[in-house]
Image (cartoon, rainbow, N blue to C red):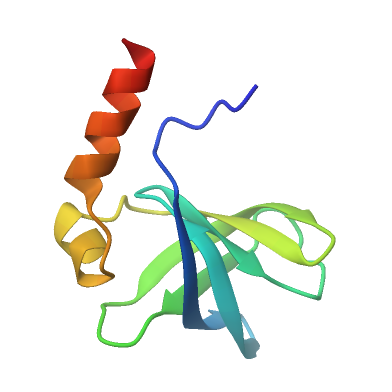
Length: 104
């Protein structure tokens, strides 16, 4: 059972990632207001703090929540705003409507 509270949006967004002493480029495979899944070939320990930079947006701070094979889950320190999701071309209002309809 999926216990996530937020709707996830499939994406193919490039982000610059940075941890203490390391920087790399990764693809975000999905994103929600609370986190994202990124492609990551190196195993990052759970709890590793990182900063994501997506072109045209403010930096997003978070921590590694899980790592499996070539993917890692990131939990954002602060939820993304609706304006940030819209800037990425995503429609949070539509996703919330779909989620409520499915729950009801």
